[in-house]
Every structure is written in structure tokens, then in C-alpha cells.
Image (cartoon, rainbow, N blue to C red; front, side, top):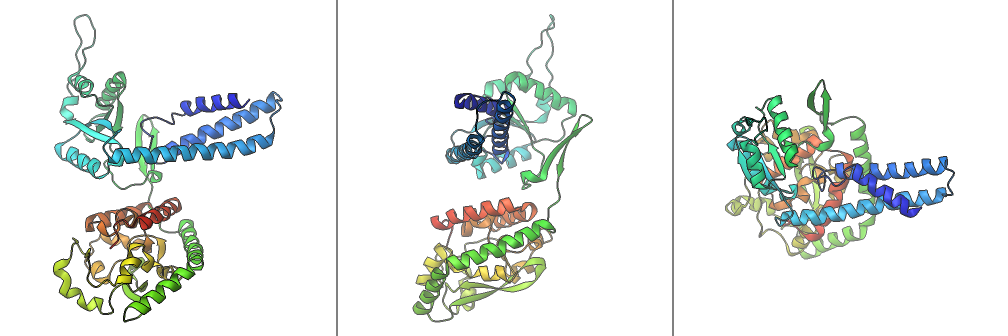
Length: 419
């Protein structure tokens, strides 16, 4: 019986295309298909055993289903991490041929270079005009392969990405037919960036597929759930790490002159100012020294960052490396001024220089951690910091918050980008 269940499970995993190039290693669709195939397998087994009155205990299914789903999910997760690591080294990438204007292709190439985990390797490009060179028939009616199809075949591309929006429906249909014959995937760029998968829904009606983009959610049940998580998680962390908090406070007090805590003016939700609490990691008069150190600033934009900041104390270096100096911010979370996960809390002078787009960072509470924390921390440029914060504001969800919180632990323990 176990062998039959395993065989049926494998067949359904294949039927649901859980290893299709379009979903493998990217987004949540791969996991969704795996879970759907697994649930279908065990529901089918339960129905068949009931109809045929087979001697299959319910306890077997109750144990096998969660164990099987958990084991398969972990297997896919480990495989995904391995493949992502290989992609960062330039291996296992799918060769891609891009169709679009020179500017669109250049932006696409830059994105692939910056985010190699996409798993694509650009091997060539062509303008949309090449697609309009239709294949013609011979005298005996046999079709002749178009110049574009020949180009795809010779290039060895496994995927064609269309970056241009000026192709007609008939031209796209013709392209899909050509690629179908070559067993090459067709990918369409919607021309949108930093929109999370859960906000995108493909709706097809009357032969016209439309990509529906859900509005960002800033209020309602999601915000109540986020606040409940913030309070519960903060109380848990402060309780569990109380000895570490006391030790850090004692180390700061005994090793340098000045207060244990540093209270900084920050701007929070809807532009309201608040005092952010941190363990002091610099000398007591650090703010007064800022003007004399502007020539050492290594950041662009509105940020002020120095890798080897002379104001940081010996204990402060350790506190910063492992983000221990930020633990008192959980008190800000309990007071409703911050969230566990959110955009970086900005200084008043930074907010004064915000344009209308960047001010969208203030639509949610700033966070102790966020996409900026798990994507490089202090190594990020101003442009990247803004992009990540705006992406979070537009797409935040509880699932994303949990993923970022988990990734923060790895980033902190590794000490990446901390100074």
C-alpha cells in the first residue's frame, strides 16, 4: 500500500508540474503546487480506501500526511537554497533571449546582474521589428522557419523574455507558436517592479488576459493582526533576552562616560515624531562631532555612514555587530511608535528632504528590522534603501513579516553589513 501511495504521489507531483522552469526556485507557486499535489494524493487515498473498504487506518493517514508534506517542503527549501547559491556563482542559469528596446534590455540586464538568484542569464537581444519578419511558405506549401526562430534555435536559449509592450495580439500569438515548436518558454514583462506576487492576479475574459494589481493594504484586519504580533513578539523577546539586556546595559555603563541609553529623534507613522531608544554605542557627545566628520561620509543620498566611525566605543562595536544596541527598540514597539518589521526609521532632516514618492515610507510604522536589514544593512546605498522600503510599504503582509524576521536572525548572526 505504501508503495502505491508513493507512486501516486510522484505522478501527481508531475501532473501539477511542480518542477516546471516557470516556478522552480522562485516565489511561492512551487510550494503551492507541491502542497496541492500532496493534499490531492491523500484525499484520493482516503476516498479510494473508503469506497473499496480497504484496511487502511486513519492514524496512518493522520501521520503520513503532515510528515510527508513537511519532509517534501523541507526538501524543496534545501534544494532552493542550493540552487540560489549556485545562481549567485553564475551556475545553473537559464539562457535567455530578450526582445525589446535598447533601454528596456539594458535595464533588464542590470536587474539580472543585481539579482542573480532569478536564475536567468542574458545571452542576446533583438528589437521587436525582428518578430515582424514572418515566415513564408515554399512552393510546395511547407513553412520556412522565420529568422527569429532560427536565431532562438542557434542561441540555445530556453526562454524568451518580451520586454516590449508594442507587440500586437496576433504578433504575440505567432511568437508563442514559434516558441512552442522549439520547446522554449515565453515570459512577458508587465513593466512593473517591486509588486509582490500575492497582489498580482491574471484574469482572462473574452480572450483578453489582464493582470490585476491589488491595492496596498494599510488598514483594517491586517493592521490589527500586525499590531497583535508586534506586542506579543516584543514581550516574548524582552522576557527571554532580559539577562542579555541587563548585561549590555552594565557593559555600556562601566566602559564609557555617559548614559546607558541613546534617545534619537525619529519620524514615524504619518510623519509623527518620536524618541527611538537604543543602547548607546558611541561616545556621549557623538552628535556634536557629526559636522566635523562629514568628509568621511561613505554614503550617498541623505544617509550618514562611516565604516570605521571613530565615535563608536569598544563595547559599541560589539553591540552593533550583533544588533544588540537595537533591542531597547522593542519598548518603542510596545508604545506603538514602531513595528517589529517595517521601513528604516528616518531622521527629521531626511524626511524634510523627501519627495512625494519617498514620503510613502511614512504610511506604515518604522521597524526594528526590514528588507533593508536583511539585504545588506549599512552596505546599502540610499537608492537601494528607499527602493526596499517602498517595496515593503506596497507589499507588506504577515507572511512577509515572518520571513523577514527569520532572515534577520541569519543576517545578525553573520554580522553582514553591520558597522
